[in-house]
Length: 202
Image (cartoon, rainbow, N blue to C red; front, side, top):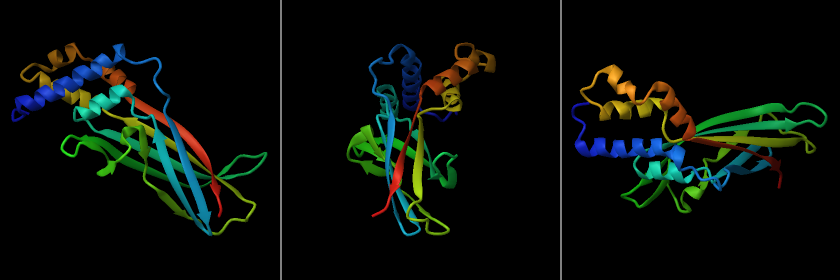
């Protein structure tokens, strides 16, 4: 910890201050995040192309531009829709992707892949499933997609607080920034959305 440079601590401090100031700067007219997807089936193979829109709110964009990374947790579930009954799960996949801003490249990156449209539209990783057997032509398949973006966690905010208060006792480190407040800030810096689409056949 002692090897941490002044410039690095300054950058982390700016990020922490920005995070703490978000409570007073959230915009009421902020666009709601949403998820869309397109899914196709050829034989036993189902391919899904999910997208997340308006997931990166202005305050989260500022934090990522300061050097923090956003963790995207994506969950996709393939369901067989049955009228007048519960849908049955056919398959599911969970993914974790990293959203970052590269000042050197001058653009946004998703798992190291440049995003030409910026953070407004996130083209998430394509998912493919191979079914055990080809469903009947009348079978209705649906894909549900859930996306969660978290820029910082309570643990990472705690580390920032420690770096900024080197030399102080453990009690002094927590005097201004309690664990409960750190957790609240982390939850406030999380956005999610859900969506679904019907599997189409050519």
